[in-house]
Length: 294
Image (cartoon, rainbow, N blue to C red; front, top):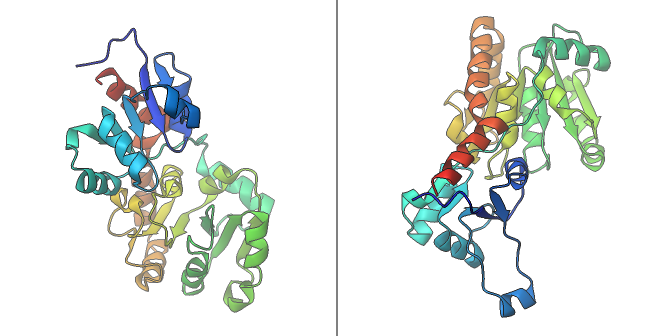
């Protein structure tokens, strides 16, 4: 039965994201805060209607999952782990993939702008890499892949913070065939425009946590490749999947797709259509539908 609309729905979360930021502004939402020591002793604990789970499945998380009416997670892998370890029913847990919030502009126009800014031939294909932690996300493996390509007319862009890019520069001499193709960007302000300008986004990550950058790249009409270790594998097809961070087949796949303009453009179009389902607006509609029926 749906909660009385006169009463706000209570939500609790471990990590704030852009979807939760939007929800907090709604009048039908009450955000429960982490209780301090005295609150735990002198006041009764409020039970959330909806618990947004992220991170490790510790005892506090299990308690929130068992007591809340609905738990929201960002992958089916997370959902299956929770069901296996808590024995809750499927009806009490919902999957909403990470939200995409990008000001979409014509990728062709943005590519012209970026190429002019970075002095790149507009006909060159742009292969892009960025991550919060570029090392654990496979920047070395990314460079290995790019240096193995037979296709000639491409540029490689890596964007990261100042410290990460500084450290990466010491590794670049190992890749002499990328010397005139590689562009390193420190603390670049408009990362979204790099996604829009890029043709291919590769993430040979060792991280399991769902990579929202893959969804963003798909939304921006990039061909993507990502390791199957990452939970984002749930939304990409077999062609885009890497068996490991050092999958030797990926360079061959990239060479093949760059030589077939028709297939290349078709994949870019399909990726955009698929990722559109996960825009912030669409995810907000999904969670509000859940809230209305709690």
